[in-house]
Image (cartoon, rainbow, N blue to C red; front, side, top):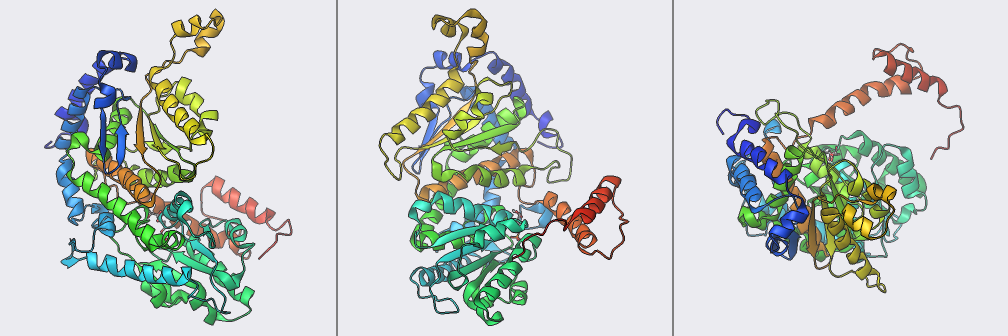
Length: 551
Ligand code: G6Q
């Protein structure tokens, strides 16, 4: 590409030209001209079937998008990631979530050291620990078995564990209760623990840095809650607290024995860490075997991403389609719509994965990007969304590409429910693509004044991801699919998908305001802008007007 910006490059301009042809063709036309596309524009591997035929593309579009990927040297970038190159340039780190699920015998070098044995050593320790807790061998301070597990963490140290717990609940040990505390809002902790017995409760403090204010405050509160509840001193902590972190020093300062610490490494980004020790709560819930099966699923998608030709490569195709709508149609969002209730937290998980990764405005060289980067990902499980925001997707003025995710077999067969659910997902994709013309509406006998309101333009694109059933293995594949689609997009834009400097500013500013609002002896003169100064003054004057309950 030389010194040319992305948007001046040959592959980009070819797509801009081509877009004019696509604009002239409705999906109805594309299907009429090419009846075979419904079968041809699909790909299937490792048990996942992707139908991308209802996208506003032709075979030529795909060729041009793949040229764009080749121009960005996507193949080399994938290899660079898998071989441990420091592709997180602003933090000078390797990006090796793929190492977390690589089989025992493999070899990935970071700074001259093979990291795979380290990964498996931690996995083995997690296995041993999980078995001891699940089999009641591990006892709390008063000799009772552990029945409640509370994960304390935020961001990457929370969203993955929460999502995986919900997604794999079917496989979880129902004798154990799982709670997740993330928010600094004390209500989160209070509600999560209000009905728990400290004798039977174990906290997992999950924090890569072990300095995050939300997590450290919640962990401190948990310690006090436990010791007060048991009526004992700090000696009880060892039986009720474990840590997941990269920071042994801070863990031990907090009072957790580092023998009860499960480590990971700086080459695992928070939002890419649910398959590291951060997944300890997941392993406790579903057991080590299921956890390893999830890792196997991740790994199979890694191999698919690394080896499948781009024409049949699911993360590459989905990443390129995201670019197509984001950059050539001006679409600002992508809706992810799982037709599987267990996946209710999946869109929330993807929000962090995709938006923290690709919410960037400069290239890896520090140049301002010349086009839009990361789209907003959002969604809700079907069919609930159908009775709320789908209206805007069907008849609003915005283009919202959708990813439908559906499973052929339900985990629990309840009457006719599953066939009805599946009929809905197929119908939605069909309606979005083909709509309903004015002529069709008229032939239904609709009065003329109502016709415009009942017309569906259609031509609204979607992907359909179809697989057998939601297993730990499938979940691993789905998460890896989105991880690699996100990476694919970042490579095209040449941005660093693995840093998150934007998260830092809020943390720094909050630290400055805390003493100003906590300490009543400080003057009411602050050095912020007029609005922030006023808000702080107002807060200080008004607080404590009610008799707040403390725990
Ligand atoms: C993820 C981000 C961020 C991080 C949290 C928690 O990629 O880095 O969401 O996971 O800020 O950080 P700790 O795990 O260090 O507490």
